[in-house]
Length: 420
Image 1 (cartoon, rainbow, N blue to C red):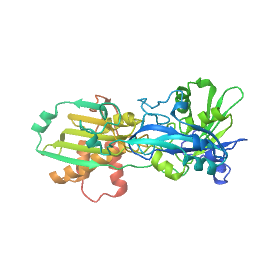
Image 2: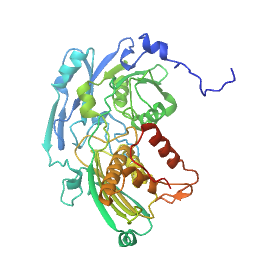
Image 3: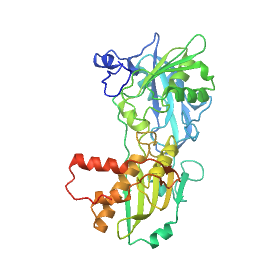
Image 4: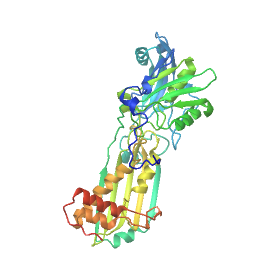
């Protein structure tokens, strides 16, 4: 055995544990004296919180603690913007916002206690369409504007591109909300040890990022926070960031007992991140021989109530928005917009699936307008060695054409293609 992995079948190291049912997932972990936590979520998409009264819940048998925003040392977190509260304080901004969390001796007792928490809301106007949210008179989710960021990419001069174009084609495409739907829901168990270390077993994809966020939220040394990742029943980006970990940590500290929390499937849909829905507008100018000379793209990304990974996702989408084609004149504008919808977060592809769908639909439409085979049209415009992207990056070695030719051969494309 020479150590090479090429051409060699290697079994997964956890394969036997998985197929025999011995792999331990988040909900499989237990600790002596463990309590069970449940969250009270907002009944409004947008409302000011006037009062939270937990007194009745605390009187119920089995209830050991209730936490609200007042119990959080640093009640803001986020990947690029610290705009999201651990527990809603001044107002709720979508139906998934958590107002209070209960720890009790059983799941049933914790669930019963939620009904005894009284929250006085002042409902506020809400906005659910990102285009409407961009208007100056739209209800404001945060601050004075719902436009979180505007990403600009410029290359060449699109005005010149329109001038030399024989045809100009425009399209508008929309993508939808997508939930990760991993088989395993979010689950976390926290314990505060005798030496003052938080130990958290949690179904997360990035344990050190979680530990860093917890350190900021809890105002606690990161070297005293240990995040253990069990086997994960799917993540796809949906377990990239903190969700329930602060709740179990805060409750473990308050009760001096281990605390476990597992989201229901309903909570997964209403209270965790989703793939950002995009509205994408394309305008492309093409010469008579099928060369794309100009492309203008506008991306409107629905961030939902908070930024989460929205800015990072939109930046990647904007960088890739022109597609794998050489276009001398490009203008790209990406807008990240707050709404009172579910939070857009990390999901496989990070914005590129949305724009990839859009620009390939657009390419088909252009090919139909100019009467060219869609494969031949794409091939004519593909990036090649030493092509430059709209960002200015130069690609030294590009195998797109070889890849397309091989794909054509394998799928048996029936039309004649003029290979250059």
